[in-house]
Length: 460
Figure: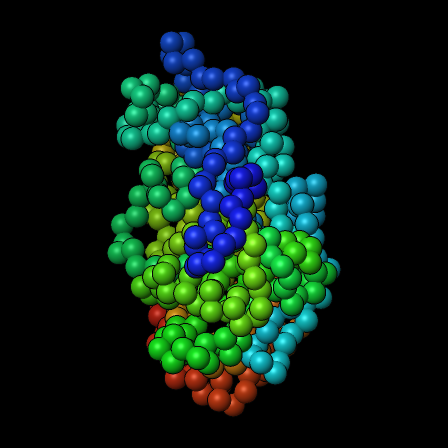
């Protein structure tokens, strides 16, 4: 929990129940980087999120020297992460889930719902970070508590200048700073869609949901029947409820705009959430923590290759159609780590080492042609979702979750590649209603042409 002093509910708006944020830190003694030694580390990881720590852990396991740089290295990550259980099982991280549900449910409208037979889990952020940090410490990773403000590249090393005046020298630099894109460079106009969400972990008198199922999407809008303006806004740019019930009186509730350009104002989303909770009869007694999420989706990839290596949000790895990233970046960490170890590890003669050459190889491994094509298809999906109103969105997901599980599982978990994605698209079209097919053709033709054009231009 972000806070332990949850405020008791009284009369007034939901937001009045939000406690003062008390940031929780891990109780670790960190081995700190000693700048007086002037050593050149093999890898400097800028950013202490899941992706950055995963790479630091795996590179250090191979015996290479690693420095992790973050302004708050002990801080527990603030946002709630939800994942499909099979994704974490594949990475041997089941012990980092604090709650699991046997499946999920999607409410298309008042009269239609889909039961998803795929277990879902909430990540125990404290456990995941503790597990990674302990392994990093065991492997000899050094930590530096600061913010990197500039990087200067030389032929065989880079100099990272921090806001505390310390300069750290590294053979390879990994930018894992998320959406702040601290060091990784982009050369194309950055015009993503935005997923915007407001969530609370709440103690409630009761809620109407089955505690064995999480609510993946609730597109119902009857809670807005008494508010014409809000209902009209929601019919143009819809939001849905995402909910993880922990017990009969404790639940995570999040109102989410899947993707919009520009992103929906947070106040609008909070207003919709309050109306929904009133309608569902959910009386909030107290709020343990709240979160504001603004996730850029789609947009161009960074310059490929470039001297600084990236992973996670800074490397364009957010799923452009869903906003999912945690499982995908954790799965990509071994790819980046193995690539770095391949070129720096062992008894290699580094006298002729080229920083640019190794970065180029790492970027190639992270974004091979099949991953770039996959992302292009996902951006095509996002471009269609951007154009759909509430009714169109309902029709889309009604068809989407009617697909064979391997298709929707694969799409949500970034496991489908061309040509499977083509079959996915054709299957989705065949499952869609006639209205939805006409809509997809009308609103998807230009994005389809753009996708094909980009696929033709992008070659190894």
